[in-house]
Picture (cartoon, rainbow, N blue to C red):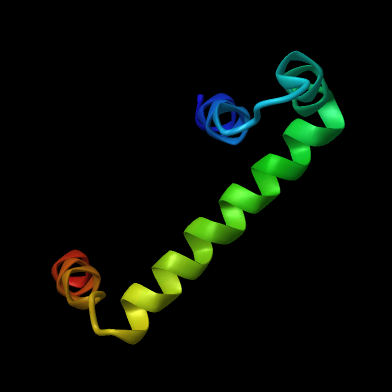
Length: 67
């Protein structure tokens, strides 16, 4: 679902050869590449959250689980 949404987002701004671009982006190789981009993006976002101290809730949860 996320991969399809990303493909839709990528083709939304295309003015020429939109169908051809959509066809290319829906190949297994392109979808796998897009999946890797999404995973990397999420990983970086999470690392930024941790660096900013947004992981406090995780620490609280881990402490509660240890009890």
